[in-house]
Length: 358
Image 1: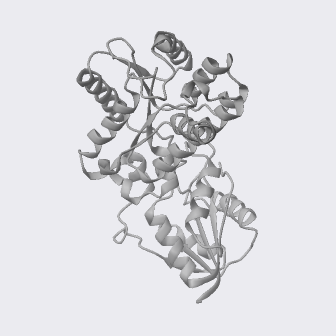
Image 2: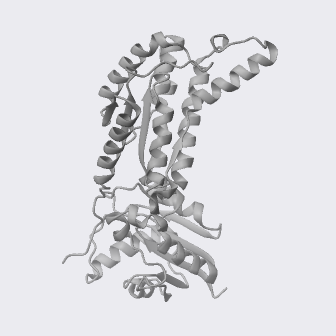
Image 3: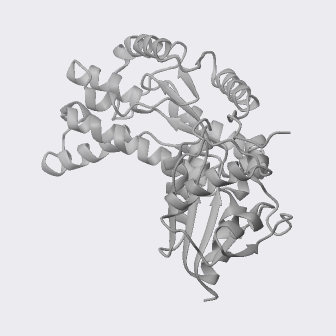
C-alpha cells in the first residue's frame, strides 16, 4: 500500500458511481480509508441512509462515518474552513492522515489542513461522467450510475389494490411489461406478486398433506400470519426496487393486508398497521364489471363490494394519491399508464445543499 491512512470527505447526495470509484481508488492505495459523510441537516436524504449505502458497497478497511454539518460553506473564508475541518476531524476521530482523496477542487486545501498528500481522482469526470447535482436534476437519466440502495430509495412505487378477482395481478403485471417495452432505463421494470396469496397456497398445501379434501375455507389464520404477509410483501418490494427501473409495481401491500386481517379476524392489528408504508400512487381495481372467477384460493364473490368500499375509505384517509380503475381491461390499463406517467412526469424534488456564496 502507498499510504497507511487515507481520508475522503463529501456529502454523497446521493452516493453514485463516481463516489464509489473515488473510494475504490483510495482503498487500493491505503491500509485504511476513512470516509466522512457530512451533509447539511436540511437535505432530503437522511444521513443514516447514505452511511448504509456506502458501507454495503465497500470492503471492511473502508470506515464510513458521518454527522451533519450545517456550518456555512465559503471556500474563501479561513474561519469557515476551520469550522468544517473541526467537524471532519471530530467525525473521523483523527487529527492527521497520510492522504486526502478527492474529485473536487477543494481537495488540495483540505489535504493541507490535514497535513496530508492530496490525491486527485477524475476531477473532470471523464472516467465516470456523473455528479451529485446531475443525479438530483435527473435521477432516471443517471440511473445506471446508482447503487441498489439509492435506487430503492428513489424508485417510484405504484401499488395495485382491490377486491378478489378484480385484476390486481393482471394490471400490475401488464404495467411492468408496458414500461419494460419502452426500453432503456425502463427495461428492468418489475412487479411484486401478492405474498398473501403465496402464504395461502403454502398453508393449503400443508393442510392437504393431512386432509387431501381440504379447501381454502378450511385454512385458519391468526394475527401473526398477517404480520408475516405484511413483512414479506415489504421485503419483496424492497428487493425488487434495488434491482429495477425508476418505477416499481406491486400487487397489494400492507394496507391491503390490514383489510384482509379485518375480513378474516374481525379487526386489524397494530403490528400490521405499523408495517404500512406510503407508496407514491395507489391504483384501485373496482369490482364492477369484472366477472368473479373462483380459482380455488379466493374467499368469495359476495364480499367484493364490501372490500371495494373499504379500500375506497382507506385510500381517502391515507392521503396518498390514488386512481380508481373502471371499465374493461384495456380502459383500466390505459388509465393506469396515464396515472403512472403523470407521477413520473413530476420528477424528483431534492432540497438544495449548502452552497458557497456567489
